[in-house]
Image (spheres, rainbow, N blue to C red):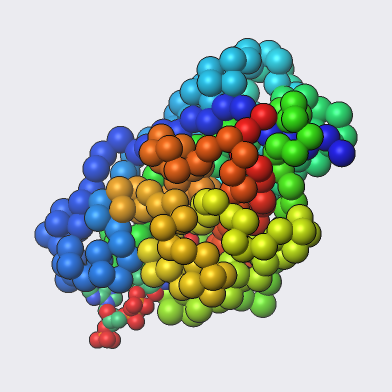
Length: 309
Ligand code: UT7
């Protein structure tokens, strides 16, 4: 089977830094509370999905050393598109000068990993170059007077180019896309309204689904938790990551985090954390890397890959 390997990675962050101290000026909260309960110190706000997604995509293409005209498909994961339609991916396609098919997918914060899974299946089916973008601008749907949500979210983008792996054992090993629609009301944003969330329950369910999705992709690839060199989890709350790692019996040091400076950027959070881990040298050729995301829906997705081409 042809496996998809990541050959380019790019990211972009919202324009303006908003620190916990900034939020404490207008909300009944404190830097101490936010850091202790979430791990977040600051987040970035500002920019459209087209702008941030396009920026991340250009960096990913450059790193992969391919021209946009060579792309076979663009998949853009977002739950906060700039317009109802056209899709953000159509606008990014035009911005890049690509001529391939393009569509958006909405699986909330699990969307980037859904995108990787779809890219893998398209590459197995014969495509050669697929661009997967995760971009969200949650700040536009955040009630900045609501301390239970305003402290969490930020804007950002991440993109990867996937191509057939050169070596047989590199690339995507297994994927899982899940949905537990009975929990759909835990985290919602209606048209014209702000994000509403039952934080405690999202927390509880998030840990459970992250663990089961991770165990599933490990079993499908015939690997154990001890084989994993790095975990790139959705960046919602450091305590969620901590609990999931504990239940998976994977040392916390193996979890990549970026939420300290980005907050929860939904579709962008996994590629942003991946970029951070790569630049720190925490992911190397041949490493088994686990991506695992969860979000509104309740959606969940995991992908296991062996790093390198
Ligand atoms: O992509 C998925 C997106 N969502 C998530 O992943 C959210 C998952 N949930 C969470 O991250 C956490 O539940 C939160 C960070 C949202 C909240 O943390 P918590 O430890 O579950 O706190 P809590 O909701 O149980 O609230 C504890 C107390 C409450 O006061 P009382 O009732 O004990 O007096 C809240 O009113 O903390 C209060 N509180 C705050 N205090 C200071 C809630 N928000 C704040 C705040 N600053 N920002």
